[in-house]
Length: 369
Image (cartoon, rainbow, N blue to C red; front, side, top):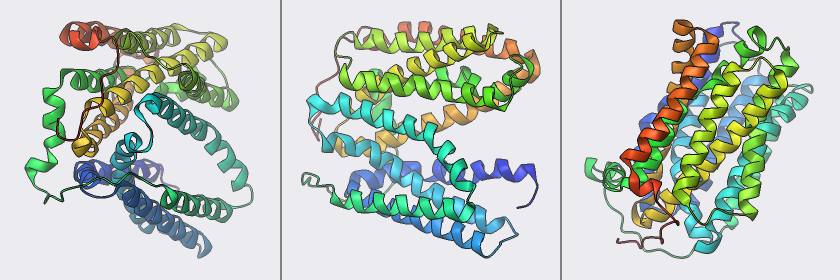
């Protein structure tokens, strides 16, 4: 539309800024009102964004700011949907099936991230209007399906938003070493182990593969994560929870180092595949711990804190990878990042012994615990 590469970067910024600004208030909303209704309304807003983008395409819009406005609206909807979607899972399934639900949810997410760009590219051959029309239709189906969900009635005391209520999630995380350890471990592991951000440079300058090879490299972590999630859905982790979590992070860091040192395309694919699997183990256990350890009354706010940590680790991790690549070179930056991830895991074992020695997932807390 504009031919300006800066606008491509602003696309992500337009969605990320409202998310960061609103996700904590969104967590408060998820704890005060019906989470199913919140998600349905968010999907409706996303349908509206799709309609706007379709209209811009049909009229041949030549200026970028209306697109950015639609993306800000989309980012706002995502800010409110993420805490509600994470907090609603324990309301939908019994405790004994919670691990299976998290694993299946993660597997569908990773399958979508793998298949989505491919299907989008195929649909784009028929024109962008077809892509947006399909997106609108799928989101409309999501609205319909969400309205069919039946949640057990829960008495929620509506409390006016204040700094105290907005920061309740942060206070809870700070006073629960297991939750704090799990969230912060993921933050720093992903922050330092952001090799995926450098895949285009690696494909060109180290592995010497073209666009097809780059596509396979980008797909490998998602495939590893998706297959691991499917496996966890059928064979959930029930014992030695702490060991498994730190083992997943150590695998993530070790595979980052191997990928950084590899000049073999096949070895690099294998390392990225196992990297995704290790990350999935950590994600699975972290989500289980957070949702089971947190009372339902503040689950939305704690989920919002987790979302902030995830967003910060992803965005800052890509920035950190770029900066270290400039300072130390491409290969050294990835290897240093992987070693830093390994160091973080070892340090966190000492800082959070209760997390390291955890044998089983906690019994779900009641609303008032």
